Image (cartoon, rainbow, N blue to C red; front, side):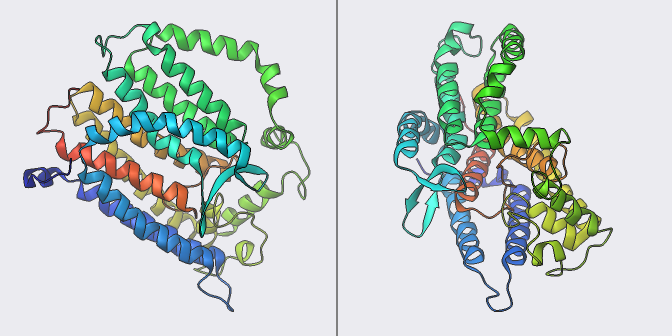
Length: 370
């Protein structure tokens, strides 16, 4: 089960690990800034984030050194258990910020919907690989996967957590497309979505409708548009070189909401300016290009599918979060991977990247067939 052959270390992806360390340190630094108070410099959030990062690297190496095939077999069966946990969360989960999304685990809350991002690629890959005709599957082969994906989407949407639900849905559809489902399915689905758009609008919660209307330019500056307006002010006021670490006024004067979580990119932009945000985007871009390079080098379809699924939610979350805080997308509750405060999404990100590196290490030595 555990990796013991030293020859695999030749293909350990040290570059991506170095980038992950850099991004994690930047995230910790700005969680410190976003929660800093002179009377209590090291906030509880900073301490929890430190614990999350340290334990996250431990999780990273566990997932890296366990054979990926063992992991995705476990992941396939555990995904059914996770669906049950999501149902229990809707009934007895902890409520905060208008959503019933968490389960209390001693001194922190865990968000089960985050675990779906990690296990869904394992579920889809294992299911597809177990079919005799893979990778040449027909639509009928995908019906159980589509049903499970839709059921997962509904459970998370009901919490309500539209951001995570959309990330899971988009990631799942991308994997199904890569697994070989007919393009006709997406054409028909798009037509159905367009025809049922009015019904979908009625299903949305009032605050979700409000966020879409704000994105379209409606709402008052000091009410509905407050979050995005304060975010833009923070980003714009940073200028070229920023105001300096711990000197961001929008952040320190408590104008910027959710500064340690969804809007931490705005804190970075205010304190480090244009050059600082470009550095952060460069690090993310380098990590993602490295991921794409490794995925292309994987020749076996099943391993390539799993590797894609493990990283696509990280890429989507990064793009959506940054686009959200600068006003290019409606505001949804999606944290910036490795940067935003939150133990649940930190652990899932580290587990996904460690699992991915485990595939990268084995890609030239192990036969990835089922």
